[in-house]
Amino acid sequence: MSNLKYLIVVMTAVAMLPSILYAQSAEQRGLEIAQAADAYDKGFTDFTANMTMTLRSKTGKTSTRNIRIKTLEVENDGDKSLSIFDEPADVKGTAMLTYSHGLEADDQWLYLPALKKVKRINSRNKSGPFMGSTFAFEDLSSQEVEKYSYKFLREEACGEWQCYVIERKPEYKYSGYTRQVTWLDKEAYRLVKVEFYDRKKSLLKTLVTSDFNQYLGHYWRPGKMDMMNHLTGKGTLLEWTDYQFQTGLTDRDFRSQSLKRIK
Image (tube, rainbow, N blue to C red):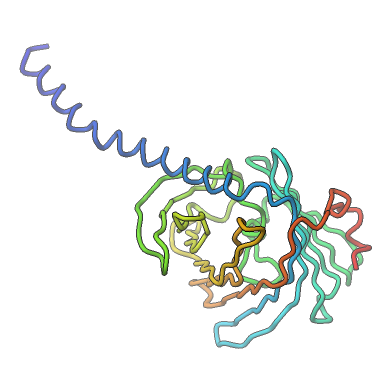
């Protein structure tokens, strides 16, 4: 190779180096922020809460459901969560149990009292809507760090806070999304907003959270979670109340065999 050609190769490599380093650092920084957010929320042990789910049609018609939530933190695995429908009468007694995992498929069961049957949810159907809402089954499992690959995009204002804007792409099978763009506040890693992009890479849904409160002097939880489906024009508002932490829940409270007997 002539000296001139060698010089051209070296100069080209040097010119490309900043973009290569940026790509690597953006991915690494995105992962580090996700890991920091996960570490910040560890140690809550368990919590219970009441939730009102309001479904909005494209025309603005609404219907409401009242749900009790129980969540158990699991060491070295995803959380266990149980959702129990109390109202209205046509869904009373319906219950969904979720064992969240990392790259391994989540375990989910749905009890339908009208059928008196516990149905295991197929991992290929996790992108389907939960009980007619704009939330998918996969949206309702805990978001383990290893479920995604990450890329830091930027920092920007998000309401009263400054936020990290992170892109994450699902690494698990059968997700309904190609990527998600998330806004996490820099102070306490509160998840302020998520944009969900479908398999055609188009913006499908947007989740906005608000009315955060702090518990046990550390853990932040939203009072409202509003999910809008841009394709259908439908929306779902989740309003959370009566959070209680460290209530003494154990694995015995999260058994699929017990779903039929839940009160």
